[in-house]
Image 1 (tube, helix red, strand yellow):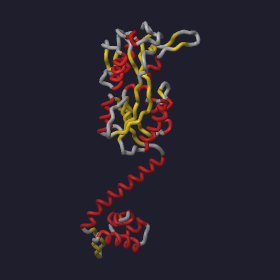
Image 2 (tube, helix red, strand yellow):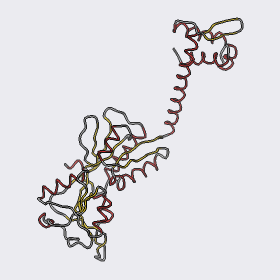
Image 3 (spheres, one colour):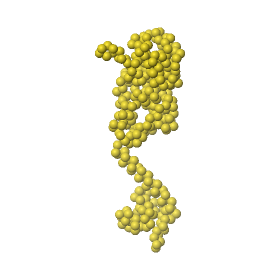
Image 4 (cartoon, rainbow, N blue to C red):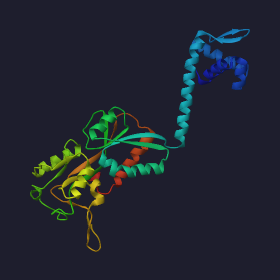
Length: 312
């Protein structure tokens, strides 16, 4: 069964006969009759009652009409989709991520996408890491970008970048610009803590345990911006991802004047977290999602302050 045969069949139905169908199709009546004969032989049944007053569809013909129209509509939609694709990267890509990555890493990627592929439509869902993975598994997002996810045999994980998670304090803190310090020097300090329910918060809690520092935080929250603001106003110190604090870290300018609302405190071995791209295994991404992943990799490789993945 060929598309041309179905097109001829539908023309006869819609035009009410062979004569007008030949005008629509720009073919001769013998050629049209030959196509219908071939179609009937393949199906093993007659599709039209041929009478002096014209033709009417048989029961088989009436059944074929519905399915033939569905086929031709599918062909039309397929052609339109391919034509749009030929024009460039178009369509939606649904991204799920956590606040810190979405606020500090993702905007540049989205900007690059907008510059290169103006017809692409990224949408971003913000949730906790475990909720983002659930959204991926339930097909509510196409791509997950999270910190230190748990392995899942159904999913593919790719490290986009590694970054330090550093201890920081505000300008009024006694340890401001006093780095490095020993772990014993941070015992008893007031800590603002990321919730241990988050992967980064759990990572920090394990790191403090390895340093032999027991912490009872004065405030615990799952929002990195809240933690940073509390540190800035002097409520305590906190471990925060470097991407969150880099715009606010102190430095020394040419006049030797200290600037910046925060300072990093070097204490013990470095703490690292992984920002991981998570997708379905054995499922091919669409073109828009594919170019988005390429932009993620490029930006991750050039991210300032990230750890060289090949150095491990």
